[in-house]
Image 1 (tube, rainbow over the protein chains, first blue to last red):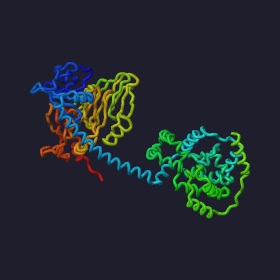
Image 2 (image 1 turned 90 degrees about the horizontal axis):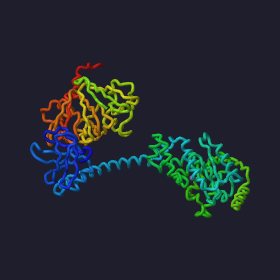
Image 3 (image 1 turned 180 degrees about the horizontal axis):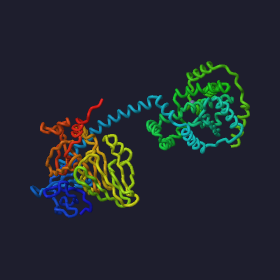
Image 4 (image 1 turned 45 degrees about the horizontal axis):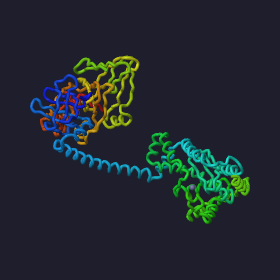
Length: 377
Length: 227
Ligand SMILES: [Zn+2]
């Protein structure tokens, strides 16, 4: 006999709420026994003597009845495992109508689920449209992300990235990039970021900016550039990606609703976790065309403000795109179209003419130092 | 936990004895007095969303107070808001009760309470909101009513018709349908709905001898309208 009651027994002379009893399957049928002192007698009910149906409030209980008149008994079984076992063991003709009813219930549930699923789908679709379709929404969400947190995220990805690369600690190239950054950042009004620029020893012709102000310049870019102004042009563009929080906007778009909700609820832990998952994608992130244009325009203005010849960037792009398109990684994230060049030139023409102030370094010296370190390796 | 009903009748109270570190779930606001060894742990039953679903969807302050005898054995006095009888039920792990929103007063530590959505038609027509409480587990369960509590025992397939605003609780072996009342059902006509529940046994249905809605209407006529 089972140790704990698993069913309720009803019938004449038994309490209205039912008597707790133990029910178990046996070869002939069901063994039903009382739990504790009760007027219910221990008995075996043969499959042939019983009638079964589904019952209870949710129609999820197995109802077994037998006997007639004052000795009629009904047992309600709720344990799903026992019900399954019973349906397997009982002769088919006994449970056939039960299976039909169950099938009907399943079908009704299925159609309900279909309806609710469709409704839910439409709601989610509308939600997605709202969140993703509107860049305004994304910007709104991003504006709610604290800068410190953005820095924490950028720092994590940055560390992760640098750990696999050779970083130049000092030398003429590092000082040169620091000078460019210094000239640019001191002209940024109300700059909330502390930019950190790393020079990475690599033939890759590229530079990128992570959220929070972490900029990486590859030595490949510096060896390809014909002047400091060209590198400064790329830097200025990248700095402006950070200032406009383009990385965060892409992140929010990529992570979608979950991130936005996370931001709203202030659940930074969850968001940080999510961010780490897509962290490395930030490095190879493609910005949208609108974001590139914005970074171009604000970048060229910043160059002008910093009195760095602002045409360096255009020349750099144009020259490289003519020569070796395939080998320059910068173009995979920054495709240079004629329209883009035109836009940059127009912007350049509209800027007030300022006399550029040259850098303190000789570009040739910088490149020579890079060549030397290249040889040393 | 041991419960004792004090002053049975219209204005009863429940005395709950707790052993050291034992808990009782009580409807928030039901505690009248307690030993100094009893602490209130105002935790939400069923987690954030569980409490939310009860709070938001059953339109109720269903935020349990868990009272714990954390500093030694002691007793708690609990009383319902409305005048009416209190009934003690013993849950043995097999039986289960569906309880009307306002019917729950207290439950032992082993008593499990979940809010359950009624099928749309039942909820809409029944006028009880979409959620009722499904109470199972083991231990004592304390229900309260408005007026006296009357117990109806139903044999298998036996039927009984109850005005839905008089419902307190029923066993989960009992099924029911909402029906339009025939013209003789004065109580439901005053509540404007004219709807009743047709219960089908086996099981037990607990009903209350007074209808809170009707009582509210009746009392409203004595309240002077100002302004
Ligand atoms: Zn860019």
